[in-house]
Amino acid sequence: MTAAVAIAPSPAAASPRGSSLSPWIERSAAYTPREPDPRIRWFLDANEGRPARAALDAVAAALEAGARRYPSFYELESAIAVRWGVEPARVVATAGGDDAISRVCAARLAPGAKALVHEPAFEMFGAYARSRGGSILGIDWLDGEAFPLAATIEAISRCPSLGLATVVSPSNPTGGVVSPDEALAVAQACAGSGAAFLFDAAYGEFALDDPSRLLVAGGSAYVVRSFSKAYGLAGLRIGYVVAPSAGDAAALRSCGMPYPSSGLAAAAALAALRDEAGLAASVALARSERSAIARRFRELGAGVADSEANFVLARVRDPAALAAALAAGGIAIRSYQGRPALAGAVRVSCPCDPAGLAAVLDALTAAKECIA
Image (cartoon, rainbow, N blue to C red):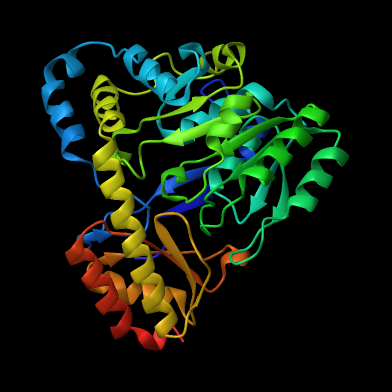
C-alpha cells in the first residue's frame, strides 16, 4: 500500500456533440481514492479520526427521516454560528473541507488569477484553482521550517493577479503551524492587496494555538473547518466555512449543490459539535499517539519534525519499501511517489486505537531497515 490518493491528469475526451473539454479542465487533475486492499485493518494513510458514540447514535436516530427527506442544515449552521459568535448567515455547511475550498475558489478566482499555496500542499488547492482557469503561486514551507511569513507577505503585495491566498494550519502533510500573529499579518496583507484569504483549519482542534477565532472575529478570512478529522466523520462528508460576511457566504452557496451533504451527516455533525467531552478525549488520545509514533521514528533514525495535527511526517531511507512492509502487516500509511518536495517521506495517521498504536509501533521496529 502506498499513497492514499493519486492525482491523475484528466483524460482528454470529446462530448457527444464532438466539442472538446474546457481547457481549464484539461489542465486540471483528478483526485483518485486508494484502491481497496483486503489486507488492511488500520487505515493510517488518510488522517481519519474515530467518531464519538453520540454522533453514531444521532445517525441511528435520524436514519429513516434522514434517508427519506431532503436535508436541512439550518440547525447545524445555527449551532456552529453560536460556537464562533457570528450570525448564522455567515456559516455555510459543505461536503467536507474539500467542498468549502472548491466554493471559495469558484467565488474568488477569475480565469488567469493566481492562488497562493505553501508547498507541499493538499493537492486539491491546485486542482480546484486550475479547474477555474487559475494557477498556483507556490511558496516553499517544508517540514521543520518556520512559516515563511516575509515571503508570503511579499508575494501577496507584489502579485497583481493574485485572487486568493491560502494558509493551512496545522499544515497537511507536514503538521506545521502558524501563530495567531502570523495569521493576522497574512490577513492584513490580503486586505491591503484586495486578495481573498482562505484559512484552512481542518486540523485546528489538534493545535495548541489555533488562530481561527481571531480570524472569524475580524471577518478577515474564509475559515474552513471539517468534521472529518477530530470528530471522526470523514465518511459522512460534512464540514463548513465561516465566511467574512453574510454576502460572501451567500456567494459560496451559489457555487455548489443546494444540498451539500445528507441529513444523516447533519445530525451526526450536530451531535458531535455538542459532545465537547468526546472531542476533548479524541484530541488527547491523538496527541498522545502522535508523540509515541514520532518517538519511535526518531529512535529508529528517521527525521521527524514536530507536528500539531493528527499525523506524523517522517523522512526515511526507503518510503515505498516501508509502506509495502506495513501494508503486509495490515497497516496503510501514506508515501509520496512523484512529489519531489516529499521524496523520502511517509505520513502516518494516529489510529485512535490502542491496538492500532501497538501494531504500528511494532511494525515500524520490524521494518527498521527501511527507515535508516
